[in-house]
Image 1 (cartoon, one colour):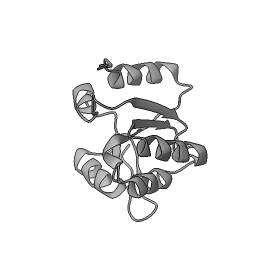
Image 2: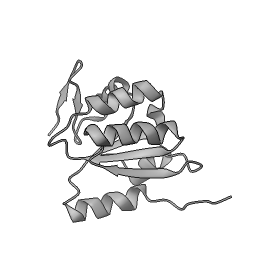
Image 3: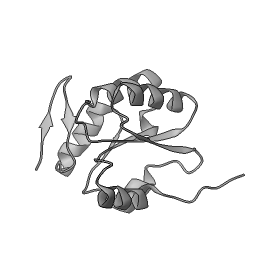
Length: 131
């Protein structure tokens, strides 16, 4: 299924076509991880020198405020949310306010889906290098 709506209410869904995905990224100013992204491509988007924080429910009120503070502190943030009670608009605003959208990543995922969550964590997990 491919869904893309333009304007202020833009929404990016996991199965968007690659050209639509690029346009969606330009609109949102942060990385939307889709099912079509390879593990290697996802891994290349992360900065190994930054602390990586996973925020579940991160597109909601508390999650967006938490993500904003984490980005301002210099961390890299991956948000997991199923968008049942939230929208991507909050994350767009976080990216715009902080100017740190490069370090903000989003994956539409229900954390109660243990199999999908486990597969996703294998993709974003990377070794931590301590100085």
